[in-house]
Length: 399
Image (cartoon, one colour):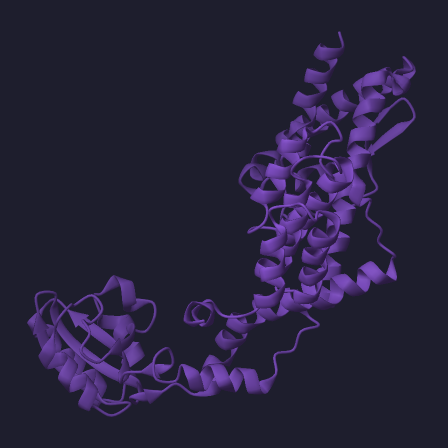
């Protein structure tokens, strides 16, 4: 019975659940408080119907804005209200399924709130807090001025395309009479992709194909020798007859800093934001809110065999040397009489020396091998490491 009830309600609610907020020109009620129907003591008003309409996607809404559509929508509201009233009368508000769904919805609300809080904090206190120093922008600009920010000569042009040769004279007459190039484009050009943009073909780089036309050396040469505002043509191509207007020119050289500043800041900012977040803000927040971590909870299980623990420590020496040292120490602590305890002590010193380059800590660890395991095969190695750590391999070879 519960499944049937749930499916029925879902079917009735679907109109409201899948919609997006919107505004309809036909959705203006003369009196939004006008009562359209009642269910027991509940009034269904014009405003409730309008709210329901706005939840329907725009592409489906029109069919519900007619009088017949509104009545159909009202019937859906009535059916939903009837089932809701009957369910409350049966005391289903305390039903385990209902309470579970409410709790789940509340959890989702809380999760959405937390995500919004985190996102807002990160934007305001991390991203917006970072201002890129001018010297860094200049350094990046100067470093890449000869590659990224160097531009070749460019012209921006618009065209009129004719398919009939006899129309050329009409274009010439219109331009000579003072008609604007844009007006002639709208009236006479037959190139659909550019008609509605005043014939604009965009920027053309020297030695590059022309948009829509491909390689046209004669036209390109004329465009790059023309002045801004100059009309050239007609030129004949397989498409027809073309007139061109040069609307702007960019000389060969380095793009101005202000033109590329935003792109430079977008390149530099992510690394600065991440550095500030990881190296400054997080440590501050950890200190402010007194973060404490139970490190023991992340140690290997107490039942882990000695050989497995030692192998785990050795596996971590290169990738995570700090944790490797913790594991070696744990091995000695748990298995002080193990036949390989002296090896673990030596590897502590070796990791400090070769991976972390903390020579003071390494000397103490190697000295512990000498003092605590005088019969160990590693004593000679420990003494040698104390004497030679930090010396470049090539120097040792020469010695």
